[in-house]
Image (tube, rainbow, N blue to C red; front, top):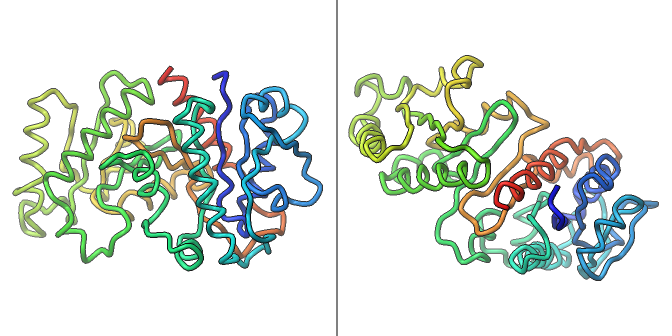
Amino acid sequence: MTARPIALSCGEPSGISPEIAVKAWAALRGSLPFVWLGDPRHLPQGTPHRVVADPAEAGTVSAEALPVLPVPFAAPATPGAPAPENAQGVIDAIMRGVDLVQAGACSALTTAPIHKKALKDGAGFAFPGHTEFLAHLAGVDRVVMMLAAPGLRVVPVTIHIALAEVPKALTAELLEETIRITDAGLRRDFGLRAPRIAVAGLNPHAGEGGAMGREEIEMIAPLIGRLRAEGFDLRGPLPADTMFHAGARAGYDVAVCMYHDQALIPIKTVDFAGGVNVTLGLPFVRTSPDHGTAFDIAGKGLADPASLIAALKMAQEMAAARG
């Protein structure tokens, strides 16, 4: 176990984030100390918590109470109804978490779900999501989003864009950067000495020899061949519809996919509750549960903390791998 705690940013306080943070603490307690960054008013009523001035206190506090490093918010939180005046507090909690990991006070950052429209409406948030904002804060030009579960890891090359825009956005340069960052991340953060990377085609049946598209012939296959010559363990381009059954998954460590749903549908089918969002290419470890704010069940005690618990555990393992 790493000596420093994990920083957990509060996420959208009107969603399920406060509830799953408390449930995760109750499940993990002193076995995996983390410090929650948020407004104590937003925690479920009766939550045993203790305000700390230094993350280092989490190691002793977490056995008995949820350690809280306060981040001021403008207003209370109403389950299911995000308040525009709280948007800046959500952003401030993320920024505080980045400051803590960059200063070495925390070993990793786990981020609870945010609601991007609420942040845009309330604070002019200019980023498509958490991943892009964290890259900006870290001063990194390019990062990779990976979704990971015990039985599958996937990386979408293009992420939050319309499907019609994917062929134009999918360039050889972008695919090469994604493969290189993915390979380096698996080596550094997951301890894989020679990652096996499966690369999906863009088109049905990986283009079927050009009958259903030529991106595989003209761009994807030549790039894979060039990187193989450098020593990368790559296979593909593969038909996406045959990549994700159990036998196929045993043959690779990560699947690089061409667009959002090609990657996320398989992993959410294989392990909906246990998936973890990992950002590769940052100078610090960042994980997040692979679900949203779930406003429809917020405040009802129904939220499942499994993905957050998995994200905290993976953050701990990744931090240990980095040393």
